[in-house]
Length: 93
Image (cartoon, rainbow, N blue to C red):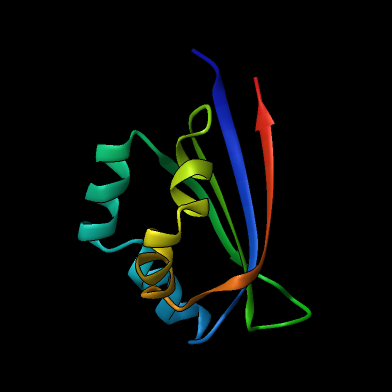
């Protein structure tokens, strides 16, 4: 089974600290664990405090398929992540 690293580059509607706290909450971490996804990095842009990046790793396609599913948009945006305009890059090893 291939491991995919997914990088999301996006705008946020709240502060970075609020976004990061949401992503690191026990509920979110339990959901990621259930999906078999690890969060490797959550960072904010030095040039734009309303822009963040998250690096995930999991089975090939798992995060991408969840992210592109229209039904998950409200779940994604609950964190402060602005879905529209998100840049997704995918890497495989």
